[in-house]
Length: 132
Image: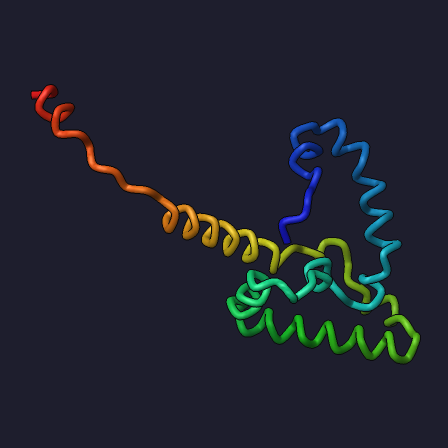
């Protein structure tokens, strides 16, 4: 999930964000996943340990909805058809639900690694007595 991203660069510059927004919207629609009823986070590969853990942390309803969307999209793919237009994922419905959890898990993993590799050293006695 830790792919390089230019989002922070773009978000800090409102003029650039305004300029790229139509392009991003066009690209999302051209990608075709919305026409199959999927959301962007449904496309995240599940091979990573952090993604597997994030999937386990999903609320039951969100996990059920995700499985439903994936199965429906698979059926559309097998039958070579798109969903009817009223069943497409709307842009306002295409909100991240998994990537937030993945970022939290990666932060936890990094913090755990930092704590495990931390070296604790005692202060020298001389420095302690000099302070008195």
